[in-house]
Amino acid sequence: MSNIVLENGIAALNFARKWTLELLSDIPQDKLTHQPCAAGNHALWIAGHIAYADDVFMSNVGKKPARCSDSWVKLFGMGSIPQADAGAYPSLSEVTNALADNREGLLAWFGSMSAEELAKPLPDDFKTFAANQGMLMTTIAWHEGLHAGQLTVVRKSLGLAPKFK
Image 1 (cartoon, rainbow, N blue to C red):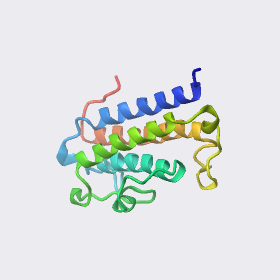
Image 2: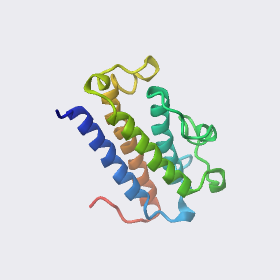
Image 3: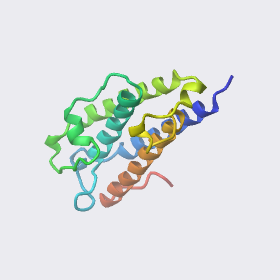
Image 4: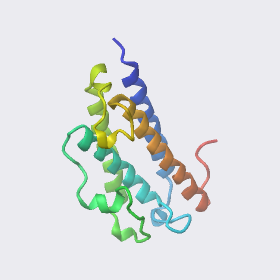
């Protein structure tokens, strides 16, 4: 039997990731920490933050082993402040590997759940994100979309062509 909550959630997560990667694809390597405004989020921070967020949900809600090192909390966690120094960050390839690996793990975690498990309420400290585990998929996709919008601002400030036409 089909599980529409799971199918729609996974489709939303895949759609969001496809566009995040597309928006990142042609930002010049030497512009990855370009901030479009004072203290603005730059492309490398955005990509790392999204990868880190997948890990946070997987490890804290899904009780899976954390994949990101402790240094990622300081660099990409909530409340972290993007720095213009690219040397303060992991390489783009490390960040994009984390994007792929963490999303693969997240999709596997969600994909392993029954309809009953997807309906299970989230722990109290995560209820501000979603009422239940199934709804969490769309919240994660929305979060990624919010940051993809920031990537469009980064791109525009660099004079790069829009991706959505």
